[in-house]
Amino acid sequence: MTLDVREAAETREAPRPRREVTTAFVVSRIAVLAVTAAVLLYAAPPLVASRSWAALAVLAVTAAVLAFLYLTRRFIPAKYLIPGTVFLIAFQVFPVLYTVSTAFTNFGDGHRGDKASAITAIETGSVRQAPGSPEYSLTVALRDGEMVFLLVDPKTKQVSLGTGEGLTGLSGAQVGVTGKVLSAPGLTVLKAPEAAARAQEVSALAVPTRGGVIKANGLSRAVEGRAALTYDAACDCVKGEGDVWKADESQGYFVNAKGEHLAQGWQVNVGFANFARVLTNPTISGYFAGVFGWNLVFALASVAGTFALGMSVALALHHPRMRGTKAYRIALILPYAMPAFAMLLVWRDMFNRDFGLINQFFGLDVDWLGQPSTARLAVILVNLWLGFPYMFLVTTGALQAIPRELTEAASIDGATPWKAFRSVTLPLLLVALTPLLISSFAFNFNNFNAIALTTEGGPFPAESPQVGSTDLLITYTFRLAFGTGGAQFGFAAAISVFIFAIVAVISAVAFRRTRRQEEVYA
Image (cartoon, rainbow, N blue to C red; front, side, top):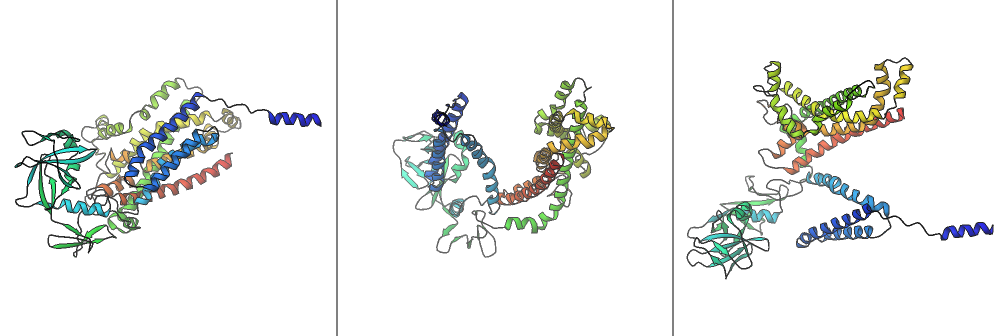
């Protein structure tokens, strides 16, 4: 008994073996700390400038936790889980949450900023040059990264510094014979190409004065004018040009008595208005069901076709008597190795009615992309050619994991090759590949490039030029949200939520059936 106690004590007192610190571990630790420091140094100054203290606190706490985690020898599992979790939140969770939150707003062209920015844009955009107002020679410069105007009075040759806060005198500037400022102390004078590249910022800058504001008229001249529209905080409205536009917080617009609104608005929460628009607007809901039906057919046909073709080729090359399988496999995966967008453009030209290779080779005169039925068949064939190499690769890997003894046992029991495939090989393949088939369905359900680069959604019927015969929900959404009416990000986000819900429900049902199948063949 005494000997057993002594041995147990020696065992407890024995020092633990030290973990071996590998080069890869040290490099990964340095990389994580370096990225954390870089993000902190890059993101902290803008947050301080905008006084986003909550975001700054979250950033500081996150950086402190990561520094503590990777500077200590403990918490080994967390060192591997934290980076993946951070990337998951940054590239998956956050985009989804941001899209959902955007769907409840009117965010888009004319509604990108807050109300104060909208008022500034309305007032500065309505500036008109008053008769007899002064004109200046304009030079664009930068002061500590901020754009400023260098204004030269043609009569007195005096140089003034114009900023968003007002007009001040400037000494020590060197003026050329054309009236342009060549240099100024503490300022970086932009050359003509540099100023032209920032033309939007130049036109947006307004220098307030006693008589109005100074605005750029091109890149070499500035004029002083007055705003035709002015904001009155007492009535929360914009006055001018014989009319009054009152603020409507539900729309994010300044609206007059006739129901007309100014072009510039601000971002507000519109609740379920975007979702209701999808369901109640006859222009949208009238075609939604048809587009959705074709979308399902396209996705299912693409997945079924690519899987059937890829599996058939994989089975043929998997046969033990097959020779030259390496050469065949290299040739068959070439479509998968080519850039998809380039191949889609090539196929679009091949289906051309006048000079396309398909019509010329078979001696046909078919307007493939000009008729609804042939256009739909064409995009499915193109997607089949692009997608079957992927299915061929994954099916080849799955076939190699199935023991040949199972098919041999089926043959001994008297099963024909077709029955052995249907009863043994195919069920085992489906158990392994169903998750990939579901992901392929989700991809093809939102396969924007396959439609946009071949048919562009057409052909379009004369009575409905807004929706084409080959439009998927994603291309239909893009045309509605970013067409001639300008960018409507909130509306696009609402339809994206609908698409996400549809794909999620279909995928959930498919995964449930997959689990049942796994239980049967487990």
